[in-house]
Image 1 (cartoon, rainbow, N blue to C red):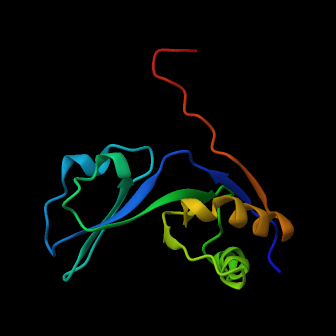
Image 2: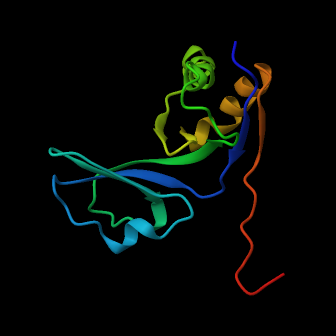
Amino acid sequence: MNDPVNLFQYPEKLVVAKLGAGADIPTWAESSSVFAIIATATETTVVCAGRSVPKKVPQSGPYVAFAAADDQDLDVPGVLHGLLAPLAEAGISIFALSTYPTDWILVPIEKVEAAAEEWRRRGHTVAPAPVAPTPGKS
């Protein structure tokens, strides 16, 4: 087993939206605290706040995002596996993506508590995401 990981749970309800290949990135895609654009030659996917996505856009969700809070060493194998295996064993589907160096796990909103419990049973911690300071306030 890998070392325990600290996971931060973000409050926004996110969706995974499908755009056409080569699509311009719409302004609504950047309207949440967590968003991602993943584009290949054949597809474009947007992860963003569900409230922002037009109804006509194909989408899945809502999801809640969990971030592996520790700076992950990209050379350490099995970190993401250690977080996903308990969810797979519990029958919880996910959508995963990574930034440098954070792993992001999107869990269907109705499975959030079950996912958090599975992680806690494996020694991981789950806490609310830290709130970013509001500009101009101390």
